[in-house]
Amino acid sequence: MHRREFLQYLGLAPLAAWSGGLALAAAPGTDYRRLLVLVELKGGNDGLNTVIPYADREYYRLRPKLGMARDQILQLDEQTGLHPSLSSWMPLWQSKELAVVQGVGYPQPNLSHFRSIEIWDTASDSDRYLDKGWLTQVFEQYPPPRTFAADGVVVGGSDLGPMAGGSTRAIALTSPERFLSQAARLENNAGNSRNPALAHLLKVEADIRQAAAGLRSAHAFRAEFPRSAFGNSLKAAAQVVAASRQVAVIKVSLNGFDTHSNQRNVQARLLKELSEGLVAFRSALMELERWSSTLMMTYAEFGRRPQENGSGGTDHGTANAHFLLGGAVQGGLYGERPALTGLDGGNLRHSVDFRQLYATATEKWWSLPAGSLFGGHYQPLTVLKI
Image (cartoon, rainbow, N blue to C red; front, side, top):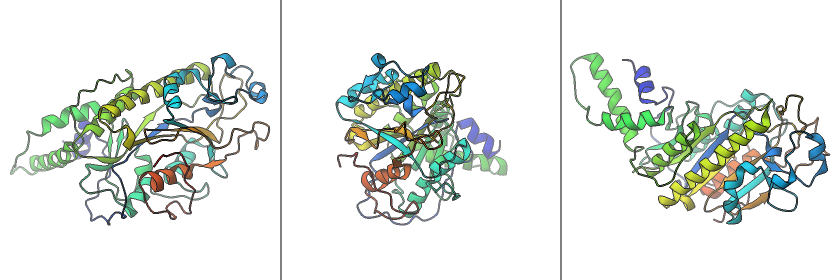
């Protein structure tokens, strides 16, 4: 059995990066014990039907069929509300543990899925190409403690995204349940062999055991996770949090947001999965007494166009609404309400650069020095109590 086959058998991505080199010292005051959880909404969620400007008549003019009925919208204030599928988040909104950031984007937006997510993953300008993820850039300059099981873990996929490139100690659990169950069995398989092929396999097993040991947990959560791929990823992520050794960041993804057609039904289902999944994850974190030391942040490659198309959907757009959740979050509305009468080529103008979200995570959440990590200084948002 070759290494690639063995890793696939375990549900561990064969492209997982693992640097054994010496790390630089972390910055004084750095607190990677505060966990960052990134939730990617793959395909580009429609922000206008997620965070809805229901008091704006232009919204209903642009969306005569897709516009959400006012009596169904969950009101946040006198002008803005949430999609009804996000009802499980209303207690978090009321307890000020949910921050809603409107108008998130970047200058000269690109409407290609592949290029735009590359821009988000690398924190680059739209005309600049980088080969390292934004977290890789951060961790190479300010490494998490070597006592951590890993710098970061991607659960439920093989795309390292913001942790790609460079020497970041990142693990991608492509099949979390298989990885966790097989890791327990591997602990008893240590040994030596004079057979070169078998010796190589045993060495691979030892490497995987070492990585897995710090990520594996058998905590019996009371929280009930959705019975879906996303729910399973969050359940596995909760087990990683419960493990004996820490990680600085966990990334999970929810697929299916490229809603060019039949958006009403598809988005309603996905937003329900998102909200109920993160509420279950919150319950698990509270069981572990980690809710106040965890920051969850959504992101996507772009939003959708304000005007609906002829197929009951929306096409690729620009600025979007995103969410931050956590016990240390200062809830409320941030950014500027969408200006539907001031569109740029039919698309929304951004008011918050997405790198301000990253600066919030690095400077405010992890207490890293302010600087030019992302090619310039971006002002953090005032969404945290710390």
